[in-house]
Length: 254
Ligand SMILES: O=C(CO)COP(=O)(O)O
Image 1 (tube, protein in one colour):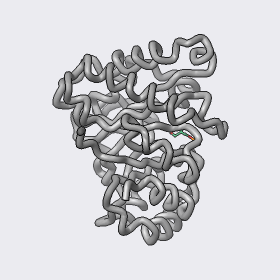
Image 2 (cartoon, rainbow, N blue to C red):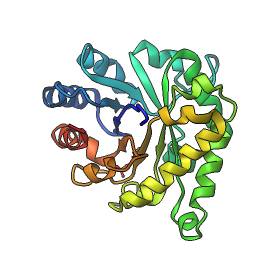
Image 3 (spheres, rainbow, N blue to C red):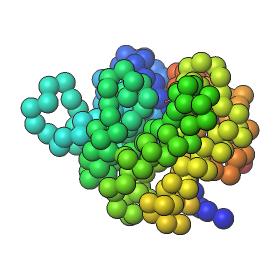
Image 4 (cartoon, rainbow, N blue to C red):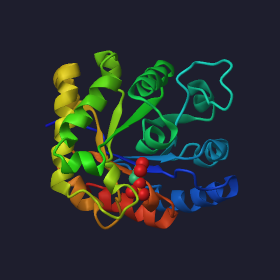
């Protein structure tokens, strides 16, 4: 039996000012302070990270960003580097989210470079992959996601791959209220693990694979029952501290 971490990560996307984030952190910490059986991550906008660093210090909640530059530093107007994220106590960073791929033109090559840069400074990448509705309906979802995983992760050493989290987020399930069935989520997460096995051998058993797409307090329990679903990346349902705390408690294996 694999000894994988369970992870629930909230992706706030482009929501919350500094004061809203601080207010959230106070309420959220009160609710989740005794959670020990899974890793809890809040991926906040850049502008809220420093304030959250202060609020979350010495708590069980880890801090993450939602994107970063592939370059180390330099003349890249508007970009944020991996070291800047470390500086505000981030330990995680979401990379390759479908919204960045679709709306901001990020390619598999960009994402591969970002994953390498994150690993180089010691951040844990939450690498996102997932198919759109057309690909799913054409029966091409598994192949598409396999290619996304292989092209972003194939240049990475086996040891470094052990430090990655993969999030499977079917685009048709994001923000639509349409969750993949837990069987579909399991099937795709198992396929991703098989691709990881091709890259890193049986150590893939230790890589957490999350599901994302309309996850809520009501459906997390069922998803977590699946053997290859090790947690969730949660958008809309992470925006309210009390309901996100409820989701986390429902995800808990205890
Ligand atoms: O994109 C997501 C998380 O990264 C999922 O968003 P929703 O949970 O709002 O569907």
